[in-house]
Length: 123
Image (cartoon, rainbow, N blue to C red; front, side):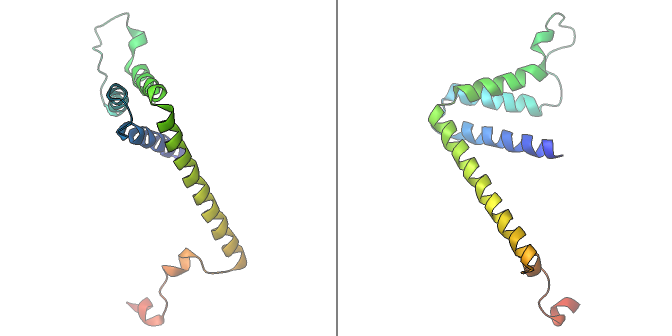
């Protein structure tokens, strides 16, 4: 499950980079095609085509996405990676604050969701 969440975050980041107006249209097309092939339920290559095992759909989709990511301008990639790193640091700091307040016995976010009076508890 954790692997699936990580993959979804990665695909969302690729989608956002492809949406950026500074990304060239040819790169956008590669990323969109790779993402569509990833989500496509059936193989696109007919079964009767022999000798083309190297062009398997499971190899083409990641290859298109990887090639598209390599072709995205460096300043666009750097901007999105820095924003993602800052978001991760912010979440990490929030987690440390919540853990510290829980150790001290201070009410955290969990206490806010509980009713504050006996009258609200009976509703």
